[in-house]
Length: 339
Image 1 (spheres, rainbow, N blue to C red):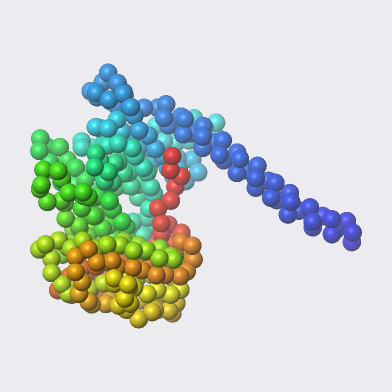
Image 2: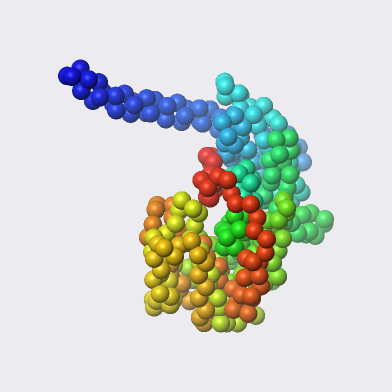
């Protein structure tokens, strides 16, 4: 019995030691892969090609156990690539895509299941000169990286993404993610109006823009988040605030919303977290909208603020044919290791 007790005492220590060893090995492996990604700069981005910059930004996210998605930019042009990762850590190029107009300073790759089919889409973000995130969405088919994000045509026939400072939420409750694109901040220096905030749905592999404008939207995480609402001049109240709990495993337990320090909705409890809430009120420009939530560390509330007159259009979307529910609830938030 004494030996058994000793074994039971040692077993957790051994498990902790092994976990520590595996963690250290993972760190070393990722450092080696990060270096391999940085070294494999696409030829079109190297100094002396068509570019005038010598600095190249790179980032990546692991796609499963033996693949990764990497993105590169030299400030002007960008490339996104899919690699196979061998046991030795070597990278074998599988596919690449370089849409005209993609690029910027710095970069980030996230993986997120947008359409609820259990396979993550690839979100590649580059920084603009004014500090905005220019977001591109790709589908990795196993053979090709397909640009499926919304784009707009700029001067000279160069395309640009129509997603900026994007938040992905499921306010419709149909198992897919909607994209809220927040216009540029600060506005363009030439005095022209910034890009408007937009709401997109992901339907059959493509983004569809909804006709009503978004005043504010995103995810509020516990314990508290305050946003200062900027109301465009052409937008008038009253406003409708839609709130839905985060993913299945990330529900809030309690939530209350305050406008300029005063509670505007009754405090909702855990039992209400699965249903959509709608509250109508009026507000002035630059009002402070505060969300106070309790729940798991990753729990939160998806919210969307629109004009009340557009509520019927949004609720109509919710009543459309429900799409297949996500098969991997753990994919609610962007994941993948970012470097």
